[in-house]
Image (tube, rainbow, N blue to C red; front, side):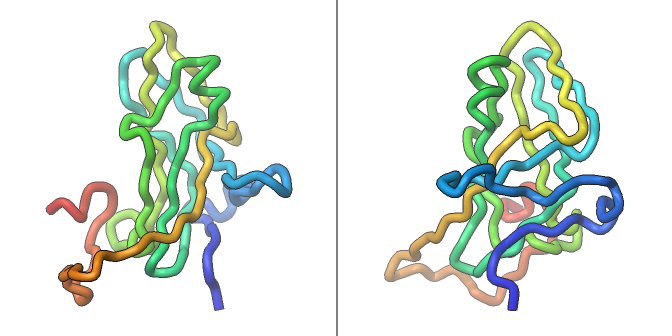
Length: 150
């Protein structure tokens, strides 16, 4: 039985990528790498594909955080500060749960991301529900990015 982890999306299975890994025994985050070369233009938002999806328990989410070296050295940040990958994003019909990293370049210089470059970290989190939560448990996600707001 799978509890939590990462898989390649179907079109990336043979692309020579590696699944996200922690780099030390005390690392909280799993490094997410770029699945293809991408140029991040100055003062623009760029979606960087990772080629992976994440599975987890229904009361968990994957928090996405930019790597500190990219933020400090190259003025790159996530456009939404922290990305949240919900458990039901996995294998959704729109994009199979493909994790895309929305990076903003606040510098005046384009930044080249090469295939295999580590760009973000994913950390699995548990969350709690309020006593009076009335969310319909029978509603299923039907799309990819931004689909829960429709």
